[in-house]
Image (cartoon, rainbow, N blue to C red; front, side, top):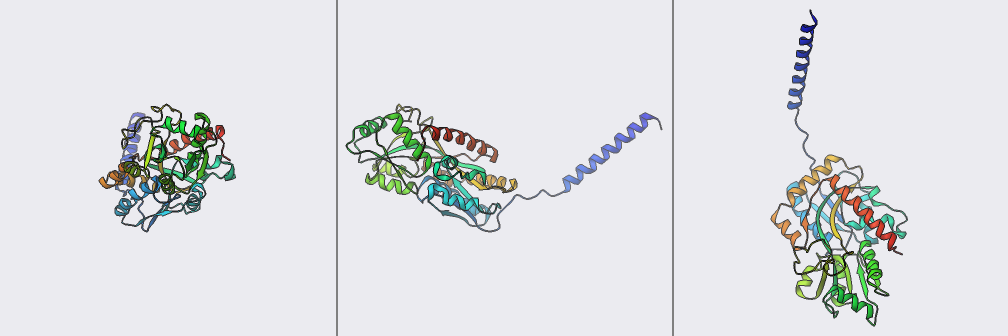
Length: 328
């Protein structure tokens, strides 16, 4: 057999092998997406009534209906979110125990009292669910209607102003405000979540807070709280009449809060991807979108890789702020 015929024969044999292999692969059934066969728990490490809790409850019912399994929201507040976060850090990486957190999760390892604990060393980002600009909220009992008016009031008030915080990033913002706006003796008061903060703001037991707009929105509409500015680059869709911090003359106080889902490190990629796919469908539900929108947020379901990059960016930003405004 000459070399040309041998070449043609080899080529035909190779082509036949490729065809057989392709047909065999086509005949193999696709591996089904992961789906829970028992209850799934979403841990919210803050008290009920805040933005994290509202976000969890907005999607849990719809996920439960899609999966045919209960999706339970468990509030475990305390230790700046670390109690609930630890529960998920210690859970099996199987998709049945998830954590809904906010950017303060990246601050933990930079705080002096955390003894180097890094939750993200034992957790992996799954997806953001929604995001909302943070806001500067004040008691309606204060004689102020603008952010600049609040700063002037706190500079000269006979008693030092107090700022409530439910998580570490709010305390960092409070220290930044005191330093850069020249507010002497601003008192930082720690809470276990946004719900209790709102209660004390209404009573003027504390004067102001950096917080998500979710819990404050109905009280703002009722006139018992004042949202003086939102911290996004543009005005919040739910509050078109409220200026941004930049418009109010304080551009350095920009902050957008994501509400993100995390799983124990080691959770298989197929499980994370299935959860993301389910959430993408869940946020299409009109009731879910209405709940998220009424809280002043918008759905932003993204991929694990995209969310991981978002978390890394906030890690760098918050690390730099803590170095400049260290917490005790």
